[in-house]
Length: 235
Image (cartoon, rainbow, N blue to C red; front, side, top):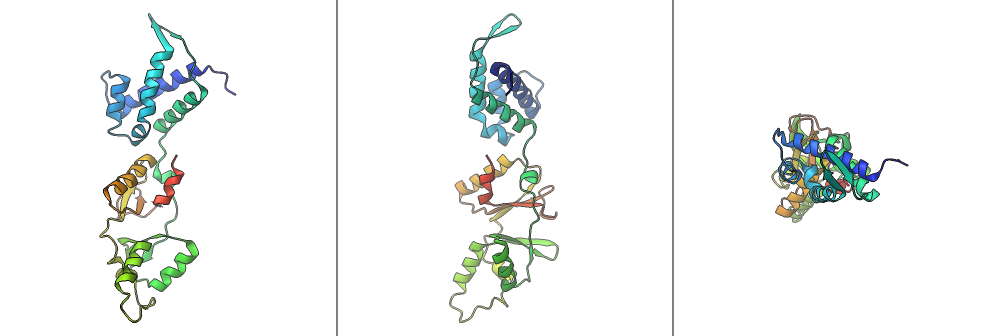
């Protein structure tokens, strides 16, 4: 167990966060802690996620420290839970968790001319719900279970639907014109990724996957994928 006083640990973390906010804002001018939060929240998803906590920390800091000349006298000790939280936030700000680290994985892709029968055999074995499709080396789109359902509905009047003839290119026509996915850079914060999904839900955008590449370009190799179910990994 750490022997440091809670107040000392709290103030160390608070001062580090104050410096980090200044770095995020790229400001050399003095700004109050509250003003720094306002400015940094416009640029940083981690600050936005913990904005209310940061404001409470500022009030707590003022409550536990009494200024007399150049010496600070602690008049109260914060709870351990509060100290652990501010230390956690300091780490998240100084060492952001990126999607490239948390969600890096080998992404299984298919070709536009692959048949539905071939894809379904692999999907059943792997349990995929979203499938990136390529036309040669060029990204063609993302097929989802919803896209296949729409394809089935629109072809239900045909006497026979051959899985051996139907291709991913055919099914892509029933997806949402590219609105079901978005490319993001591997350095993107996991909290920013979380915000992207939430904004999509609020706007009715129907986003079903974030596709990760080094710089967020669809011309680059996929290094990971994030689906809504993956959000449970983000605290």
